[in-house]
Length: 348
Image (cartoon, rainbow, N blue to C red):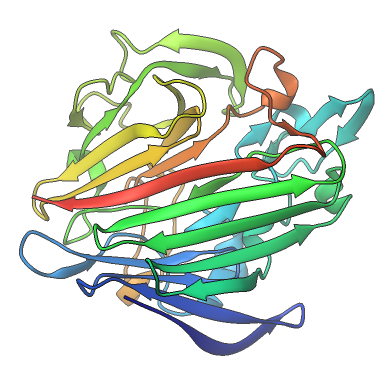
């Protein structure tokens, strides 16, 4: 196994953007930027013995900060924080104080506000080749950043194993009560030719999904998946009975014991023989099939459009800061936030 840093010579806020490459003994590898902890490449060997990159993104770092890309920003491969998904009206109350966040998605706050953790240069605090190729990134979010309270220290470790598992381990602590709901936003496509994910076979271990309003903000109501297009309790093609105009942009409540590390989803593509299994300690997973994706200069000049990828965003319940019966997303000063999510690739 190897773990190495590659300097880009690009500086943002006086910090250099660095590529970290983690490679296992099979020759499969992951490339990460310390900017937004972006997963730039996840290259595995498919059933034909060919190395295949299964995440969308760009060939050059500069394209991740291009104004044209940011104008219709899909958060390619980046961490989401301080708070994933949408917060209703961009506000919440904590300890009798009301906080108003940026309304950067209609009337609501999306993915942490205008400048979230996805657009920060993280420090590299540790890199190792044993027992797995790994790197730890760290970021200090100061009190008042995007109007969230409390100084928050976050560490995110990536490990690549010889079993083609990419393990993400999160940890955070705060000096003041604050909302936190971290997620990662990789766009996956398991097809060797990059065709739409319509025929990917997907299974989600969830008997309920969360009702959403017209702007995709969850309301607090759970809806059984039975007899709906959202029933992935048994494997089926993503496009089997979906809304062809909208696809999926839905949060699923996983069937699990709270906090336990369990299988959330499995997605398989026949032509490559690849399957992606997502394990998580988180209580929900958001399935997004990239309806709003519009990127003209992706890897190798490819144009990315609607339904060219799927995301499985593991997290706590969105908008939980405003819905008391949801599991709490408030981190207290005497607590440690932890989360583990694993992307495991299998070849048939």
